[in-house]
Length: 488
Image (cartoon, rainbow, N blue to C red; front, side, top):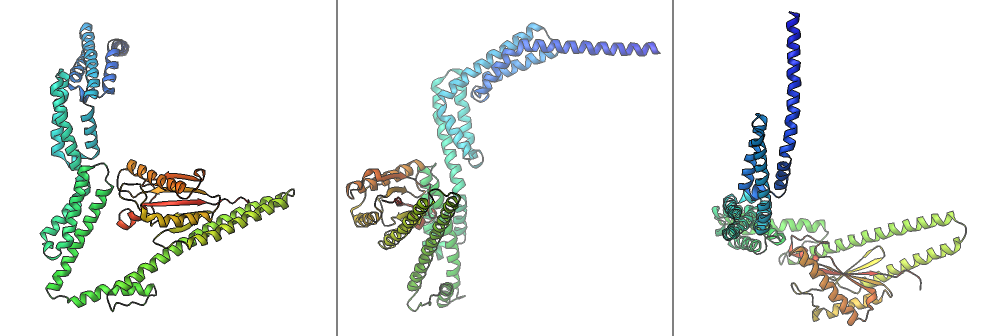
């Protein structure tokens, strides 16, 4: 019995040793036969040959699998070597074909990626699938060496991918609007609020047109779609109000009184006596003036607070440093006093300049010691940078304001709203800033070394780009006056 046990143990150990030896030998054979095939496979994957050269890549994969299977099953070594060599050859062929495809089919591949980025496989499935089929045909023709038919399918698939991309982009931005307008049609809103509903429909058409003409600048169409959404919802609301009036659920007088009530409450909060004996025009103007005055006062207080904080911090730091030093203290304290006097002068100069402009010409405010002239009255034709003659009077006031700050440095900043491409907006804002700079040199005789013109494009908005009034405020020229605080 002991003899049998020892024999089994010896036999098992021998099998394990033999198996380990075979495994080592098999690994050595694999390294020998598959090294070049593995390198060729990696090179093919690097150029996406599985997609761009599917036939050669598939042949290589079949040969590679056959070689691996043959090695595992102990087939003839020559067979394994030959299959591995065939796999290497096919993978190399696939890599070469894929590199050619990347050049010949560069346009369709870009269009394919753009469509994928726009979620066309989900939002434009039918057109995407057609594009995929034509793309596959282009690859097959190219792999066969049929360049003529490959280019033909390249053009067809490129067009389909672009169609799929546009459909997907429109679906992302316009689906909600389309649904709202469809709901409005079912509710027969057009009978009761035709003007508002028609406005919503025109906005949707404008958004579709903008996307068709420039699908990559989505700021304007997105804004148009939001406006269309609002107008569609507004039309639905108005239709319900009109129905109530027509059905005599509410009289016209009751309706007007309901709409006047919120204005009355708002006027009360603003401490304005509500007077609507002749309509709402007067109370509307009073409320607008009240809000604008509050905004200006708030801005002034914020600027004054920031300036005071900075001044106090500077004074405390310098006084602390002076107290720590004895030598030269008198002279340095005198310099501090001079600078504080200079800052007080800037404050007085600012108040002088602030009174030069009415609110339709410029907003004047401070950022630290700098004075900002926001020229709200200076406008340009759409897409243009030429200064109009009607703005010469305003610029004459600007010249007087600059004269209040002798030896100051002047920075002319150009800004646009978010409509249009980023690059074109940047260029336009720079051209407008330079146009004002040149006017200052030629007409105001300001030395060029005092002037810097900078365009910021749409990057520094001061208002909401989703409203017309906000976009108008963002289209602006700011002149930053940097006073010279050094004593003469």
